Length: 141
Picture (tube, helix red, strand yellow):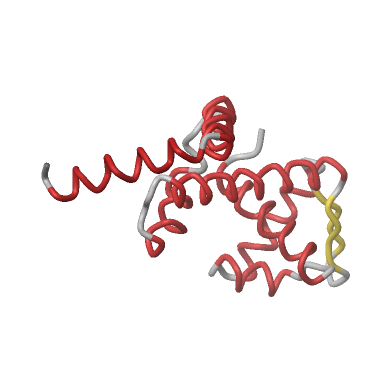
């Protein structure tokens, strides 16, 4: 199982490849706000652990294992953003909150949040009830 730091790199590499078609060390460093030397060390570790194939000066490619993990990490991030948005967390807090919690929840918890999102999507009146409760609490009623 990858560490939280490894997850951040795999997720970012996956996103870069999805959006640009490739991921260079400099792109990863910029996206994660780290030094290129840190990226090189992590990429070498990810290569050793079979998440990607890295050739110095040539770039990198995610393995099937890396793609699978990367997609799951991106899906987890998106799911948590949807959940926080749905329950009324202020838009300006959502990204930072997701970054703060995504590595600390079990996959079982992530799956249950997915179930809850599905429930709310299938029962929109329940979202209205939640919003009314939030409004009452904010007004101190």
